[in-house]
Amino acid sequence: METCIIKSPLGFTKICGDDDGISQVTILNSEDKETDIIPAQLEDCVIQLREYFEGTRTTFDLKLNAQGTAFQNVIWELLQEIPYGKTISYLQLSKRLGDVKAIRAVANANGKNPLWIIVPCHRVIGSDGKLTGYAGGIHRKQWLIEHESPYKQQSLF
Image 1: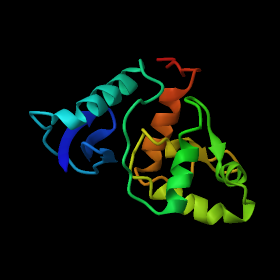
Image 2 (image 1 turned 180 degrees about the horizontal axis):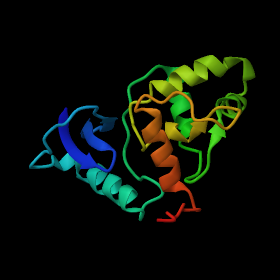
Image 3 (image 1 turned 90 degrees about the vertical axis):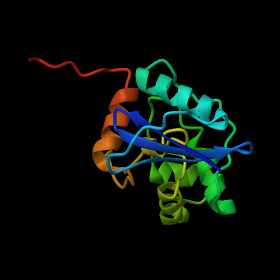
Image 4 (image 1 turned 135 degrees about the horizontal axis):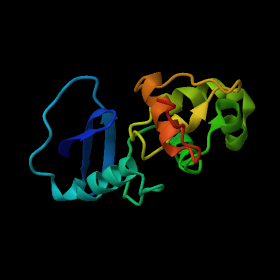
């Protein structure tokens, strides 16, 4: 398993993967040191994440190898269908699954997503439109949603 750490606008990001694909992208809540040499298996992921943060990439084209239960993998696949710049509620995601009663299980699987940004769990919000539950912190979820918004807020000062 190869690992690297890059700096993003939201903090240091750890990327893990091998020839079978990217298995983990996580935001670190501490200062770290950027990796000097990016392993070949992780180069495309690093490039695509940098393009995303620069605003030039809206979809990812990476071989993924997330490790989870069958149910979690189904939810993570559904998350990848949420278009860039759009949000859906946990209830809507449960409906897409075909089981509105599974809302808590859906939210739990969403929270266990090991592929930060690439599998866009940040695009799932509460039914009331509020930003709820985000492992990376609500401030990061808000930043990501604003980053993807076609309507950029301009500062008056």
